Length: 103
Image (cartoon, rainbow, N blue to C red; front, top):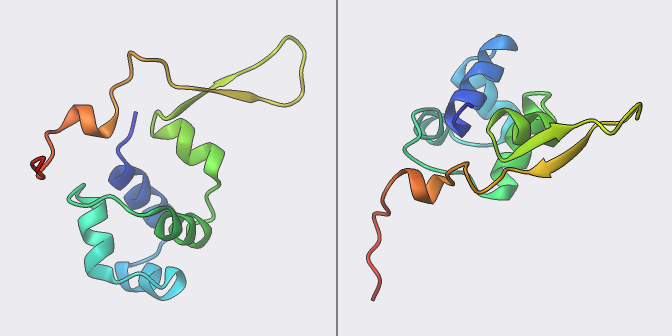
């Protein structure tokens, strides 16, 4: 299972894009992309959607490779369906403590 940052970096390198190239295509600053790739930040859905589009990656691929969903084939079905990851898969919040303290 990859982190969000590993997924973004791998896809960017597969496409042969520099940080600046991805910045131009996704309209996201290269500094922010660097923080995402090093798992120092998590993207909003709108930023993630722009990054996936710029990286020619789809949501199914992203959700599967980062462990948020797992593929499931039904018999001889031509289409793959997806299940949400089971409770054994830790969420990002469970993997690392939050920087924010409750009020």
